[in-house]
Figure 1 (cartoon, rainbow, N blue to C red):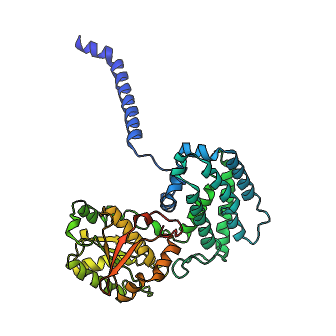
Figure 2: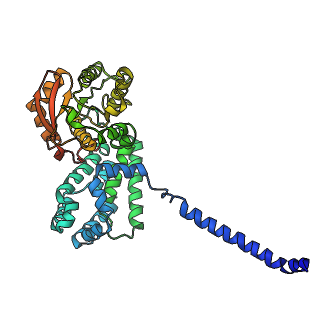
Figure 3: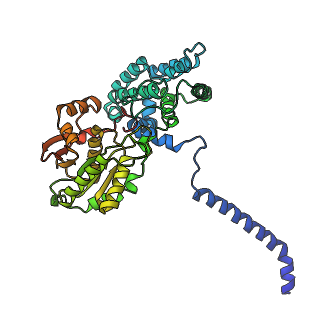
Amino acid sequence: MKRYFLQAFKPALALSGALFFLVLFVLTGAYLTVASPVQPSLDHDIKVQELQEKIFPRLMTVMADAAWKKEVFSTPDIVTLSHERRQRLSDNSNCTPHPFCIVHLWEITSHEREVFGTVLHRLSQHYRRQYDEIQWNRDADAINYIFSVYGEGHAPHYPKIDSASIDVTAEYFSNLISGMQANILKNLLQSSNQIDPFFKDAIANSIFLLDGNDRMDAIRFSGLWNNWNAPALNFARHLSWKSYPYTAIIVPGEGPEDPRTQLSALGKFRLKLAVESFNQRLAPFIIVSGGAVHPAHTNFVEAAQMRHFLIERFHIPERSIVTEPYARHTTTNLRNASRDLQILGSPKNRPALIVTDQGQSAYISSPIFFSRNMTELRCEPGIVGQRITQFLTIFIPNEDCNKVDPWDPLDP
């Protein structure tokens, strides 16, 4: 009877087994679909996106805001502006001299700057707080500056260290620009989004030219506070700042012009002075500041070499070293150090200490340096106070100067 029962139900059991494995397959597939991370688009360059957000943080934030985009780019003036730009980019048959005339087409025109600035000025206070015409003019300046230097071959702000690596007179470069222009026209034909920013292609092409010239300096150390500076950040969370007369010892870099030299003799001297001050417990941190600057396109980053020197030669603990590997000048040595102190949570209006050689110390205290800050940064990175000795100068950071400034796309 039992055998007969099993034989009778064998087809049903077989069917149930098939259904079981089918259901298992479907569920497994569904699980894998949910559990697996979403793969990015094949044409989405995460480094380019990161560089855009680093140089133009406020602009990229509002461009990702659907409500803001609808409010701004659906206005009649901007719709007309977008149409005019499309027409201008498409009508380039008589473009001369090639390829610079094409790059010039990509730039933000004075008319676009004025019309968009007016629209931004008319927005409600809510939207203007997110992005205003003042920031727009700064961003437009930065976009056009990148095109001018890395697309048209004009001299950069600092010719010795910010030069392009691509020869803009080479046939290779001409082919590159022609290809980029053809890609723009292809995308314009395929685009159906009526509220895309009219300057979207300008941002994309300017960032690509930075990338093409190996000028990704602004994001070279994007994970800095999760690795090298993580011990210092953790130390700061439990620190009694009152136990020290100064919040930090700031050491500006001194890059050698020799591409084979990792750290100059003067740079080593500055670090020796900093260690003496640190051992006197004048401050809990040493901020080493300096990017890949001297000579141009060097592989050595001043702050990275300084950090290594402090650890290897003086056994300074990692928790007491803050690495600032972006600054390209004395102006941004101090501004970026001020940013780092803000990240560490140092008390406001508490002084730091600039430790450097007597020549740079005198320069930092001079009216010339003040004037340079106002010209290049358009603000003071902090109050330069009394020179305690020929090597030590009091510095009170100014957090109002810590905002991202696209004027220098290699260290915004």
